[in-house]
Amino acid sequence: MILLHSRRSSPGGYPSTTNEVTLLETVFFIVALSVLENAIRIPCHSSWPMLEMAGLDDGSMEDQFSFRNLCMKTEMLFHMNIFRLTADLAHLVAIFILALKMWTTRSVAGISGRSQLLFSAVFTSRYLDLFTNFISVYNSAMKIFFLLTSFGTLYLMWIKFRATYDRNHDTFRIEFLVLPCALLALLINHEFTVMEVMWTFSIYLEAVAIMPQLFMLSRTGSAETITAHYLFALGSYRALYILNWVYRYYTEGFFDPIAVISGVVQTVLYADFFYLYVSRVLRQKRGLQLSA
Figure 1 (cartoon, one colour):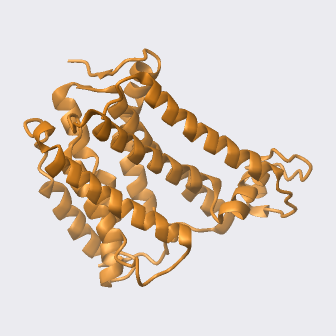
Figure 2 (cartoon, helix red, strand yellow):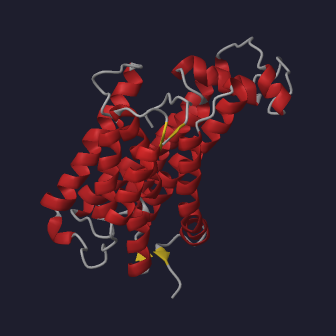
């Protein structure tokens, strides 16, 4: 058994018209711009020698739009760095897009129930400390939100809209993901306790939980635009967390190999989808179609 002694500190229907998607995106960008505007207005007089040594900031205290000042003001407002904040926002956007798709069309077509089942297992095993380890109101609220929405998604998929669920294409053998992740969590973890092993299991499982969805996409050969938006937001969430870890390494000397390596694996799995999303969905303004 290998123990890695780094510590974690974060929780981690298709519209009838295009106006609904536009409204969702507009709200997201307004919130993001408001956050940045308020952050820039807060004065800051601290120095970050580690960032300057890393070449991420020029050390000028006069430039209120510098990378350093923007990051520090975000931390003052939200007690977290800007990369983690935007990652959490991307995750929330992904969940809202998924809920919008299912509820508006009264259908779960194109969504992998197996991936959603794995995500529910991820959040359940990760947040076992919900009532025993209080970090902040934000942290606890996000944990509760992710748990409720993950189980709510399962309810919509397996009960309320089960007649629209595409079982014929959602056939990925999830036991080939769950069992190796469980074994790896027992062998490589921070500390051999129930909470730590379950947290580690959730990190490993989240890295591969999207595979049934990508497998389903490869079998059907296409995805609705709203589904593509959901997958892109979900992939962006973990990619932004990689930037969060890079940032924390340079500012705090913090490095968690379990989370970082798993996050890189997860982002790599999305790489081909990201390319198709940008080239076909954003540029050509149409649903995602895979080449034969």
